[in-house]
Amino acid sequence: MKAMRTIVAGVDVHKEMLAITVLIGDTDQEPEAHQFECQTFTEDLMKAGLKLKELGVVEVAMESTGVYWKPIYNVWAPMGINITVAQAAHVKNVPGRKTDMNDSHWLATLHRFGLIRASFIPDNVFQNMRLLSRHRTNLTEDLARVKNRVQKVLEDGNIKWGTIVSDVFGKSGIEVLGLIADGVTNASTLALKVTTKIKRKEEATKALTNCFTKDHCYLVKELMDQYHYLEARIKSVEEELAEKAKPYAHLIEKLDEIPGIDKVLAMGILAEATDDMSHFADERKFAAWAGVASGNNESGGKKKDQNAGKAIPT
Image (cartoon, rainbow, N blue to C red; front, side, top):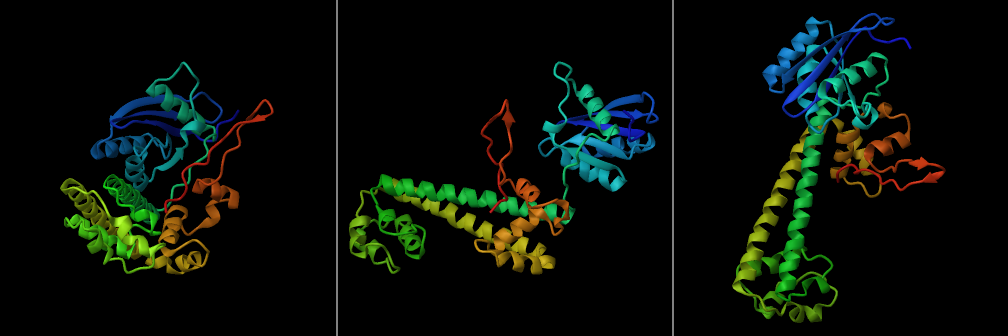
């Protein structure tokens, strides 16, 4: 089999060090291997990049190991080094021969023969949008956990607020929780704050009758402080994300027309998929990228269960 590249490098990526193998040789001969290690501090990465350039390397392959590949990509790509990021499952080495240098040599060999499928790396503007979008998702998940903790405290104090309202954290719910946080536990006083439509309004006082202690009120206050803080942070991130997404307002408007997609989710989709859908051969490829397509795992005529990955953050 004839090689496609004459000079390539393979990089085995770790948190604190890189194992690098450079293969140099004509496409029809056994290449000469140059191997070295470097640390992952920015200065060390720059020196390693210069060394690769001195050896004539412009094609580098490495695995997408956690987040550790990103600093390498960010330092080397501006230096004119073309980096192919591979999925780890696609480039496994032969069992029983695993060392860091062997792994880097294996990556270089695969890349030399053109056997590595490059992962899609979005442009920097979309990578930055993705950071914000995924951070918002994390904050939203944190907010949901805080809500669940508030619910547990209410149940512990025998407040059955969730049985008579559709949203415990609706307008009335926030006011009721605010009073409880201030130490108010009288059911009649709490019921006066119920102004929105609820399932059984006549049972509001009954549902709010409780056995709360000062400690219950203290916990509700602590949790509601977290709730309001996270809401403010989510709003701040959404504003920052909207600012970065301004050049793509026309695309966000189009996505917003799809039932079930609002502008925030539209910005999340844009951050993940970018504005150029030519990166995806068809809708199936995009579904796989978005994490909403299950895999095909068949052996011996039997299909095994295969879960879809994590979907685009909402």
